[in-house]
Image 1 (cartoon, rainbow, N blue to C red):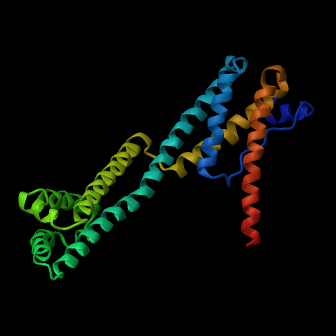
Image 2 (spheres, rainbow, N blue to C red; image 1 turned 60 degrees about the vertical axis):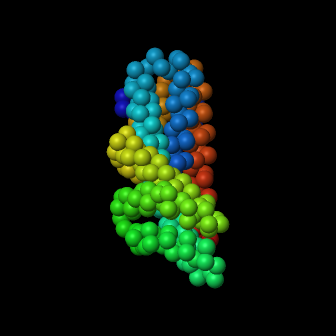
Image 3 (cartoon, helix red, strand yellow; image 1 turned 180 degrees about the vertical axis):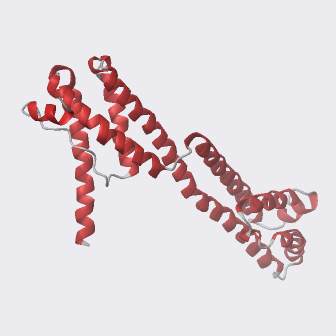
Length: 249
């Protein structure tokens, strides 16, 4: 007897577990299937079913991949922000030095002029590619560590703190870049690609199998089926609500 014949034969025990809506967002889906893994561990009896275990292993492995891919996407989205922070610090340094250089106070204007001789070598580095900009920022910061540069910085209130901000911004950028590299190594596929594969496993394997299993052996499967059904319905409801809001706009 096929799967759909079994479903028809045992239609009276509980409502069928619905498939997950194709409109579910990536992060929502990872959260949903993460719960599936928790409930798999909470209910030992179904774990004796090797087919159920195999399906859940697939879901768990793909959920882990999806989380990695989501984290990778978050890092990508933070890189422009991290780059903007260091660009802002560079702009602030040049603005401060140019301002001080125009002051009618010899000590301030001379110190600013001395530092501009160093800084002018690095004008325009914010327009370089990300890696080249990092190299140039490191070189700039090294130049600002010379005894002459340190002495000049002491004469200019506030400029040292902007240099510190540039150092921190560059360190932050490198940290984000490193996390991105790790994400690529561990993840490989994009979040969208993993989501598509996981959705197919849930809708074409887990849900149909669970609908059959709960009708054949309700004592073993009914509790976990109810939990999964409830969570899928909640997730699908959110998708539906978003759709209604979009139409009403």
